[in-house]
Structure formats: C-alpha cells, structure tokens
Length: 269
Image (tube, rainbow, N blue to C red; front, side, top):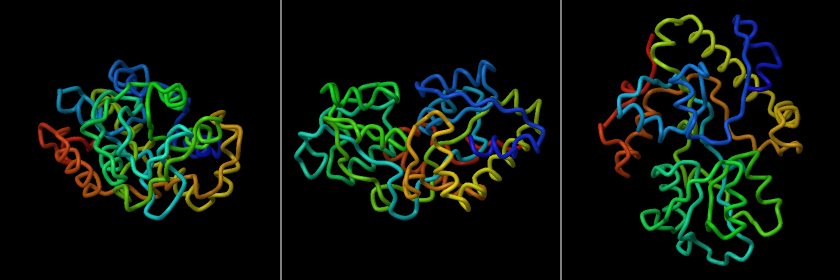
C-alpha cells in the first residue's frame, strides 16, 4: 500500500489517500462505521462477528493473502526458554482480539497445541512481543515486519514459521472493509480503491526486491526484510471460494454462528 501510494497508483485513480497505522485492531470496524476512516484493514474474525451482529460493513478486497509456498511472512514467537517442540505447553496466547481466531486456532492445532485450552490475552499488536517476554503470555502469532522485530529481541525466539501445511494458503490473511452507507453513496470511489489496490499489489508481486527496499520508508521497520518475508500479494481479485474456505473454518470453530458465506460479507455494487 505504501509503495502503491508512492508510485501514484491511487492518484491515477483520482484518490488522495492518507495511510494511518492501527496498533489496536479492535478499532478498525468502529472507525469505519463512524466514518473516521473510509476503508480499513482488519482481520476476518471480527468482521464476521460484526456482520453477524448486523453492523453495516462489507469486505471490499483482500489486504494480503496467506503464502502458497514456504516463507518467513508469519510465525509463532515464544520466550527463549521455551523448550517444547510443539505448542502443547503453551497456556496463554497474546492476540489483538479476545475473540477466538479460527486461523490462529488451526495453526496452533497443526503445531500440536490445544487452542481450546488456551487463554487469550488481548494485547495491542505492538505489545504482543512485550507480553511474551514479560511472561504474561506464552506465545503469539506475528506477521512481518513485527515478527522480525520480535525475534531480534533478547529473551524471545521464533518457535516456527507458518507454512502452507500449517495454514490455508491462498486465502486472505486480512481484508479491507468499508461502511455500506458510504460505499452505496460512493461506488466510483470504491471501484477506484479496489483497482488501485490491485495495481499496487501486482506491482509489488512483480518487484519484490524494490518492495522490500521500500519498507524502511513506511516507518514500520528500519530494516530491509528478505524477500521471502514479504508474504504474498493478491495481484488479482481473491475469488469467493477462498473466502468460503475460510468461513467453513470459522464454522468449525464456532465463529460463524449465522453460517455466512462469501455473498454475505463481500461488497457488491
């Protein structure tokens, strides 16, 4: 997104975009509903819960996708003295939301843990590493650049990167959302935003070293990450069946009480 704005992709579509970082993911939905932000990145878990409760929001596209090959994009962080080769010993997980996160639950399970027995410690994104280091939590799932920052700290280490076998490759890792009233009143802005995002991601996917080199310019990290830590960018629109795959996982973990399908969460003009 930062590189796309810098390259002028959004301006070419008539959009003057200001990017702001949310360190607390719980405010993404309220800020969109209130009109403070026109669009916001959010995890799918709170979005599904919000739509099920009748909040007027919809998904306008994927913010990132889970890599389909081995990468350093996301992983579990533990304290340096954690010795178990699985996550079975973990009792407390630090996460942005207190809601059950089916994607995290699935990865915890695939690494030998029991998510149903984990206590969720709601923690701002930038404080997850601190919570683990302090002993308030045993484990946390982080994506780049926060993952690299965490495992570089004394007292913390990488438990494991999350690969295709421990995730749902090709599904959205996070999504962009908007308020229904705003999008209904401004369909051209929505269309322009979607097009600019896809152009930005297509450029990033085709120019990964340039994308990595640009990371320090975002202010999110001072280091240039390795290319395989960038994750994957959806250069084309993520298809509805990938959202349905995620929603089926949500149903498995009891986090899709209304049995929503992609048609219930995706924006349509």
